[in-house]
Length: 149
Image (cartoon, rainbow, N blue to C red; front, side, top):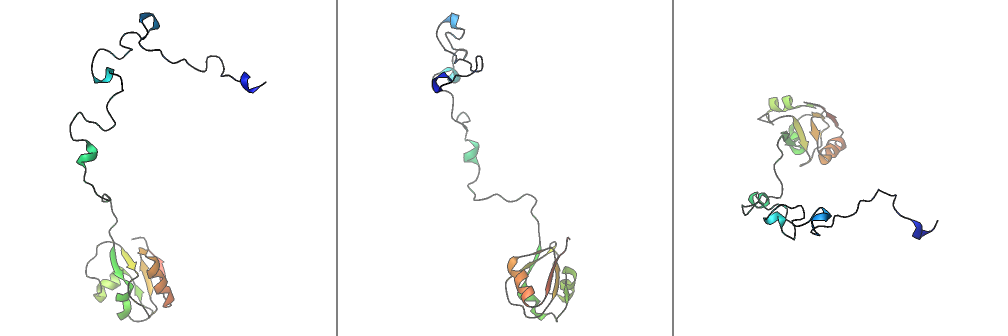
């Protein structure tokens, strides 16, 4: 067998339709495109997104960098620096922070952010921690525990 002997199996390739070559060819006259109109002309149809002159969807939408997340998670956020006033080895939860008056509103589960400095060891129980917050709490000798709230 040689390279020039290679050919597709008989019947596996369908021949291309020859359009507009007379009645006997099967696709004569209007080439199966019906009568007149924009879709029957040569050069194909309209471009993708064209809405017949109406302002297309991609131009009606606002040019925003991102769209808002529909079911966004809301957290009660607090920075590590705010926990300085608490005594050593205190268990920090959302409830204990509200009792101490550090947090005034409950906007959802507690999330610790890493701004500020911490020197006292604390046992923090929160729904989420940023990497910086976790590092600062553990560097001060405290512990971080993720709690599903």
